[in-house]
Length: 309
Image (tube, rainbow, N blue to C red; front, side, top):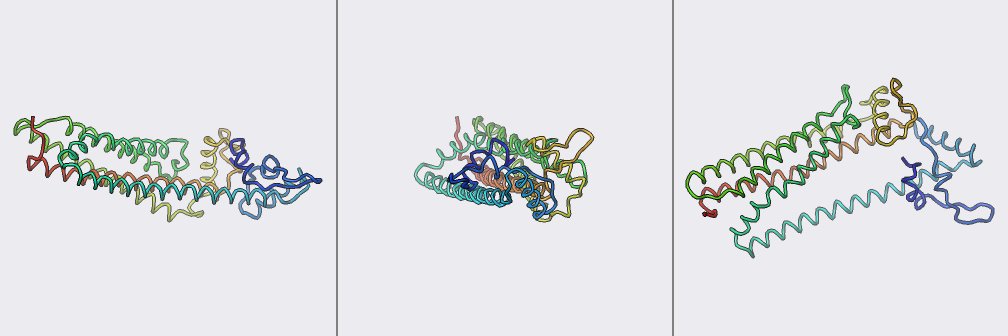
């Protein structure tokens, strides 16, 4: 990936400049900093291979240091960027919560209640779409997590799809609750049943999402290089090739990819599991909010704090 044209701007900014024959600030983005990925088992072996490539082309032995330094700079900036976005996200969540609490004090509760009921399907769109995306990403044949062997965790993707269905059913129930009016006792009874079904669906969703979150965290913590067999490594590396087109030896019947080291494959596996755990945690917040609101709505319906037509 690093040597591809999509990373040219990043290499141009991160790779150090050199001077040659009196010319200052020569870019190494398309030369020394663009060393290819070599098959290697250790960092020292990779360094030797990159520097050998460097000497053959440029009669120099500093390509590895230039490339490694640029990649570390990019990694630090990327982590800072994602960390800032996470902090900003939490700040916005807290701000939204405080705003909602303030509105409850300013606006009468029946108005807030009607607005919340009407928007149930809308605020459940995020977990529905997110669960579908995670399910497709983790369960598809091009997912590095999905593999037909002992270390397969493709079922996590299937469970994400189930959680998307549960969120969708809850959204339909929310729409039904918002769209129906109570004109007699029978209507009130039907609305109470709908609310109970909504609560039950959200509780079921919590169980599903908790299972995904716990599994992702446990696997992430326990997964190490010993968990990945050599042949499994090559298969997963070739799966990565389907997305990044970075291998040269993944033809049918020859499932090996020396360009991806074990550490790189493990790193992407861990990233996928981290993404799964974070997504599950976010969807869990939605599910808990749904259950809490369901109980509030049940109390309102049972005490006739609803709109009669």
